[in-house]
Length: 162
Image 1 (cartoon, rainbow, N blue to C red):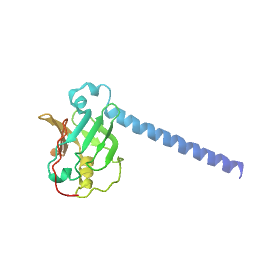
Image 2: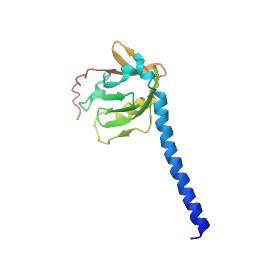
Image 3: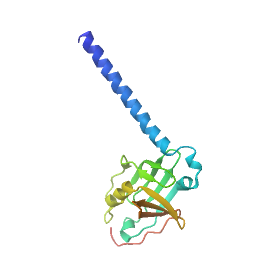
């Protein structure tokens, strides 16, 4: 291999490495900028942190016998939980009233009969804001409530579905 070609390949690899490193830093900075340290002192954003359980609207929301839950870490901009079937984790951005979840979510892939997990995840990705109402955490899409969460776990109803 000629010296010019070696130099070009090494330069290209170095450029690719630097680009990847700066891209990862930019993603980290975007999460930090959406949840700055000063914002965590405001009651709306601080009240988001911790574990929340879905208040099921339909019997099919708990067809698996499990209640979906989500734990929000506002300092890191990350969440973990379960969909009512599979484990999930990812990142989110939040202010005192806006909330959005990254589509780079990680989930396990177990099959759960009688449960529309896809609809749950699609609605979670559509969430654009939140509010607190009667002690509930309400996730909204364009001003319409899509989920209500509570600090106390509800007991799932028996649906008779496997």
